[in-house]
Structure formats: C-alpha cells, structure tokens
Image 1 (tube, one colour):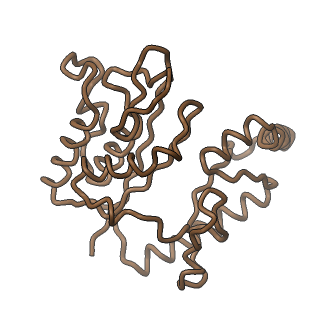
Image 2: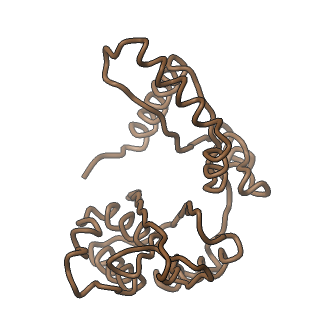
Image 3: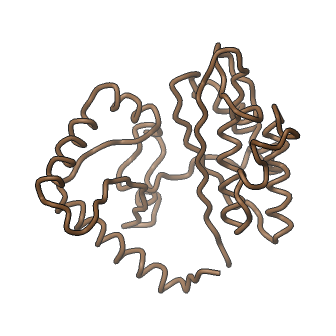
Length: 234
C-alpha cells in the first residue's frame, strides 16, 4: 500500500467587518479572517496538505492572491477543486487531522458542524471521522477520554510533533545558554502557556544536551521504520 502524508499550515489575521468563516461554516464572531478569498484558514491548510501529499503545486501558486477571480471566493470551492486535482493524480484521502489555534471564536461548540462541513466538501462520511487514539506517550489534555495508541493495543508506539530551536554548529555556548534560558522563560509565561494550551500543545523545556539526545533518538527510530517499511521518495 502506497501512503503519502501532507502538512498544511495557514495564518490569517482577524479583523472587524469580515465574516468569520472557518472549516466551511460561519461562526458568530465580530471579527473574521482577512484574506483575498473568504480567508478560511482551516480549508486552506487542508487544501495545501492534500496538494503537498500528491506532489502538486501549492495553494498560493494555483490560486494566487493577485488573481481577481479569487477575490472573496468560497474556500470550499477552492478545496473541492484542489481535491479534484488530487484525485485526478490517483490519490484519495486517508484521514484529515486539523489543529486550529485562534484568539477569536471558540471552536469547541462548532466542532461537530465543522467536521460535517469538511466531510461534505471532501466527499467523505462524517460518521467515519472520529478520534481513535492519540499518538503521544500520554493522553492529551484536550482529549482526555481518548486512549493513546499504546493503550489501544500497539505497545510502545509513540509519534508526536515537537518543535525546538536549532543553531549553527559552532555557536558559542554562552549564546546557546542564553537562547535556552529565554525560551524556558517564554514557555512559562502565562499568556504564552494559555495560547499553547488552547491550541492543544503541551509545552515543556529541555536542556540543549537533552534536546540533542532526543533528536538523535528520533532519527534512529524513524530511520528504522523507513528502512523496514521500504519507504522511498518518489
């Protein structure tokens, strides 16, 4: 079985006087995403992920913000067109995972409607979309009732998303230490922690040595997976 994974990311500023459309639905909020089209960052990120997985041009190239035909365009139609191109290339959706980070509207009350809207646009059954398990080593604070993959029966499985700062080799230790210390302070700041919690991230800091060890362990683990699965780059 040939599988591909795509990652999409989109950011839009919320401004007064714009409809707040996310995930293909209109949310009750006094501000909305600024954009050339309707600014639906959720659908844009999904579209870019699908295009990337299929090896096609990115969203900005196919639907330029300099092209007047896309002015205030319905992003649902843009996503549908992207999906048509993906399927024409011989690919089909396996699953979609969307993380929404916003300082504006509350997403939780709209989650079901948003899931159904995305499923409708993509031509998949909303009833088949559900959280089976989380891939970290512990349960997510956002989905406390959903077990980890390990708890669900695949012992030892862990696949998380992590972020960190990397600097050029040979960077003076004093600079590395300063960057580390400031990063730890930032992660502990109440407003930063609150925003990360809202987005479903669980921040924690490590020392530069610990981070280096973790990166090497990740490379070793996934190299083994790639080799044993016979994965190759097309």
